[in-house]
Amino acid sequence: DSGVTQTPKHLITATGQRVTLRCSPRSGDLSVYWYQQSLDQGLQFLIQYYNGEERAKGNILERFSAQQFPDLHSELNLSSLELGDSALYFCASSVVGLAARRDEQFFGPGTRLTVL
Amino acid sequence: AQSVAQPEDQVNVAEGNPLTVKCTYSVSGNPYLFWYVQYPNRGLQFLLKYITGDNLVKGSYGFEAEFNKSQTSFHLKKPSALVSDSALYFCAVRDPNSNSGYALNFGKGTSLLVTP
Image 1 (cartoon, one colour):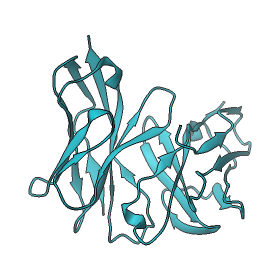
Image 2 (cartoon, chains in turn orange, blue; image 1 turned 180 degrees about the vertical axis):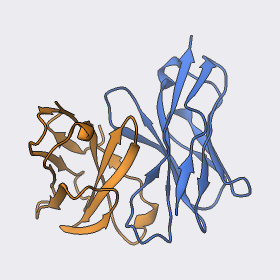
Image 3 (tube, each protein chain N blue to C red; image 1 turned 90 degrees about the vertical axis):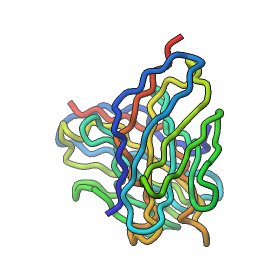
C-alpha cells in the first residue's frame, strides 16, 4: 500500500457527461500528479499541483481540469466525455523539498473510467 | 526533450534464469532514472532510481539496474527470476534541467512473463 488513495475505483458513464476523480496523497506529501494510462497512449502526465497551486502541465485536454484543496487532496474533473477518454487515471504524490527532483513518486491504485 | 524507450514489448524468461528489461533514455544533461512495476489491476510500485553515484543501483525485490552513460541505457536486471515477477515494467526519466515540474516521462512498458 503506497498510502495514496483514489476514489472511486471504477466509474462508468456516458459520452458528454462530467465526472470527478478524487485523490488523497500520502501524509506529508505536498505535491500531487495526475497521469492517464491508456492502451494506445501509454502512461501520460496530465498535471501537477504543489501545495494548492498548479506547478506543471502535460498533455491535459482543455476539457479536463484539476485542483488541490487546502487539506492537500486533489480532484481531477473530466467534462464533455468522449469514448477516447476511457482509461485508467492515476494519482501520485511526492515530497517536494530541496531535493525534489530526486524524489520518487508514489502511485495510488487508480480509477478506471469507462465512457460508453 | 526528455524521453525513454523500452524496445521490447514483452520479455519471456524461465524461472530461475536471469532477466533483463531494457531501457534507453534521451535527455540533455544528466538524467534521473526510475523503474516502476505494475501488477494487474494495481497502481505502479517504485522499484529503484538512479540519481548520481554508483552505476549499479539496487532496489526492491532483488532487482537492480545498471546506468550506462555512454550507451544512454538503464537496464533492469535480476539474477534469478521468480514467477511472481511477472508484471508490467516501466522505465521513467526526469530531466533535472526541465521546467516542467517534477513529472516523470514513462516508457511504453515491457511485459515480463516468467514461466515455471
